[in-house]
Length: 155
Image 1: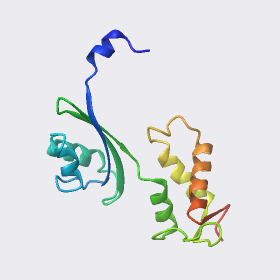
Image 2: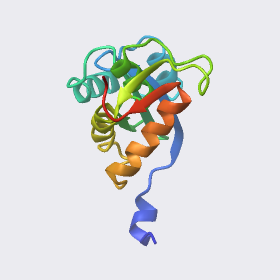
Image 3: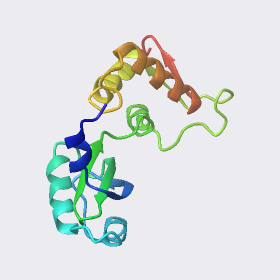
């Protein structure tokens, strides 16, 4: 339950913007510019903050970012790690998954790969309270829908 002070100090939200931006590559050009510009947000402030937060990732790593734009032209944003499908494709060394998952196997990955991806995803805001085992199960399910077979050890 919120206190009266928290309710009175809340800022009215103008919009919630979800973008996928390459790590360290936020520029005021599209897609970032038009998305933030229509809410009159400071583009350069966002670009500098985003690039500073994502400098530990390799360049051109697709980062999901959720921007909350307030009516007083200020903003907050949260950066999530890249998607599980991106990690699976990188670990398997493929461009795309199977065209017929369940029938055609695109490639195989070991449980060790899944575990490493789960350790990275555990730092995400939505996964921080999940156990490592449940994150691994979710990643294995995603791998199966992409046509990637998960084995105990690679031969």
